Image (cartoon, rainbow, N blue to C red; front, side, top):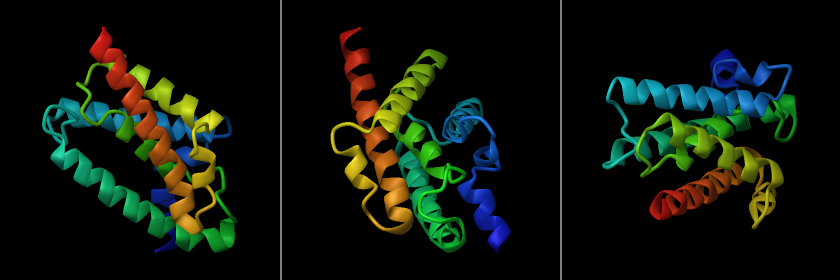
Length: 154
């Protein structure tokens, strides 16, 4: 079971990247978005209900798996990147899939995730897997709102 938790929290090993594991996790999230679009599953737009359901399920599984490994790995270790996958997915909810939109969502999410403005850093104060996931969920929400504004005005 521990190996399954490791597979989940490292987003299929992306968290073991020696360079920028969080960015690697977000890139894997973008790859999944491409797969979802290519096979017409879990649409991000115009009816993202299944996609939102997937986000909720993966978030809950990520919280649980992170809690299982935190005793051994410590608080919010860099190799836990399931939160980055979730953040980039949230950034794309209600956004039409285009590579430009994915690239902008990725950039905005990483901006908010790295700088942690507007209360994002406070989300890390929650204990366990919730604290690991909460800051990236909020960063994804902010990225989504900014991207919505960009698309509205362009």
